[in-house]
Length: 188
Length: 368
Image (cartoon, rainbow over all chains, first blue to last red):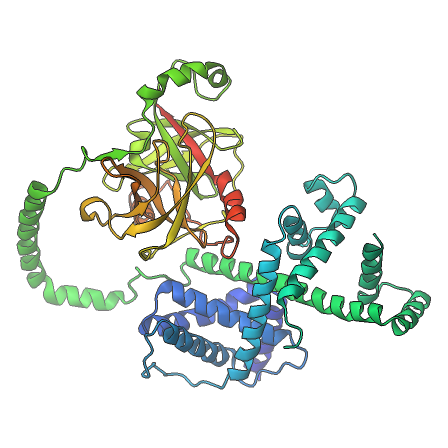
């Protein structure tokens, strides 16, 4: 019962991007994933990449309201990493059927489909942002990613007052939206 | 302007910042005008996307920070750590004698081989030109720029011995450059493209690898929290596009961008410390970073072949890691932490350059 409770706390912390909690999950899980990747034709960089992607997938899952994790965190992360790494090996043509499988896994196909869709959406947003040009890009990044307020923004971008910055921000946002939806297929 | 007003209203609606009366009015309006309704749906979805996108970005940053922190605290490792000491000692006791004999034999063979290698090794110097700025040739220009220099941080009555480019590897003020850029100087004044100057000291020099470490020692310098580029440990593939930033117009303070591709996996005459790139570089480019399209530093630009056009060589970035490991073992005072996080991946080139160029400096080395 006690472990179940602490798993819930960990997941909640992850969903809130709490760096202390993330550190705990990282410390408990990274070494085993790393040795899994290293034992299966991977490098240290691959291990870092794959593990972090699995953390992102878990984060996305933890964000949904109806979220219930039917297994332990370590089983979930291991299952995701195993799937991701198999896929990566297939892509570079090193696929082998005898991938070590020492731990139990659960089916994560559905979660990965959602994760890949989100990843594709992020790429579109990234692309839209980078084709936006300056100062729009930095302005929007400052507001939405770095969470600066209008006062800080107008100071660092040299607007005379925060109303001006606000108007500029809306103009930029409208352009970003246009760029985004030009790529994004709503039908999907 | 009307569009903006409408968007503002919609955002207030989405974020629940309307009072009951206004809300009721707006909802009625939404029912009456399908375009407005459509816009509300669209904008809600878009803002959610943007929100998710920034959450994802911030999570990635946290993950990278946690990774470097745990590496620092040795909670996780990236190789090089031996875990089971007991076993090692056991084996050592068991095989002591064998090891001693093997060491003697190995030593003798190593001596012979290194003798042979030294004897047959090609002498590169006459075919290669180091890309450090040749100061003698520049003397005239320096006189012309005398007024500028007078106001600079270079002490009077010293002779600038050599120069080139350098770039930060640790936001606390550690830079890397070529050993031949600093020659036997002990001090340097470095300046970036804004013309800001800092005093620096040459901390470490490795002539064999042709690398040197500089440390900014200046009150005006404020440490950089996050460098935008990371450092690659693996080798590149043939044909990969690379670019560099440097100061080929030494001593003019103008950072110059240059592009090329990896044309050989080894350096001059098969030198495995470096690799070959097809790029037109000049004196003064030496010590500048070579980056790939993801904004990872893959090398340090160093030499060019004299009798061929555009054949340039760069020292592989993994040598920086090796050098820093060596420094860690020999000199406890210097604590360098190579930047792990890369914020340039996926950015377009212009944006990458804008972010990188502030951390590429021009070096003027001198001895007191």
